[in-house]
Image (tube, rainbow, N blue to C red; front, side):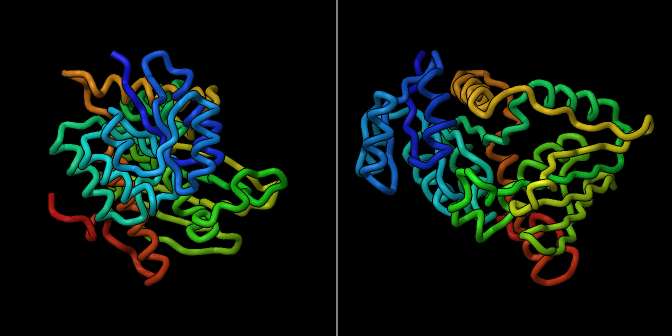
Length: 307
């Protein structure tokens, strides 16, 4: 059965990654586009043979699922609105900037039996996911180090004018990517200690259930020659580095669509990158933000409503 999708967003990521993958997917009908700029929505809808909507509610009434490519503070509220309208959710990371909103989205989708996938790019690269599965199964990892340094202001970068990235920095933009790789191996994060550094850099120590510790450094403003994506785990057999992903962003997003479509079917297995995982990542980031502000270790989940 074909799943009718609405695409919410008209920026670079919406047009070049999500829209391209949705339009090419054999089990998807990219039926509708909505954006905060109606003119851009019309242009993008014409590009992919979809209908542009000026109002969101009529779009939600016409589709089975939505893919959202908007700043997290906007995505959170629209995802909750879409879930209340009965739409399955394919969200970008981070799900929201508020742990309460992220928890509300998860709870609403659970109540309505909706499928949900959060697109953590690395987790939809088979080589990376296979490495994480095998490393976690070995059960002998007690430490990890992650350096995720990007340069959004590099010449030609499509993200140079992204206001939310400018305001929230590497913690909220790249922190989700690092955590999406560490948590499957080290386990859920229970406490964080974080410190801000120059060039929009955040350093985090994460303590995980069972006692393992992660050491992360993330920034969106690295010098060009200092750009890096490296995650390594310390095992009894030595350090093991996570391999590079072999999929393009469009192909990886196609994998996320596969999983969302599968999740709409009866008896679908639990989704490892589902809304609950996205909610928990937001809780870690929020705790880290509090730690930076208050200069102390912060327990994760204190801001979440009781489950």
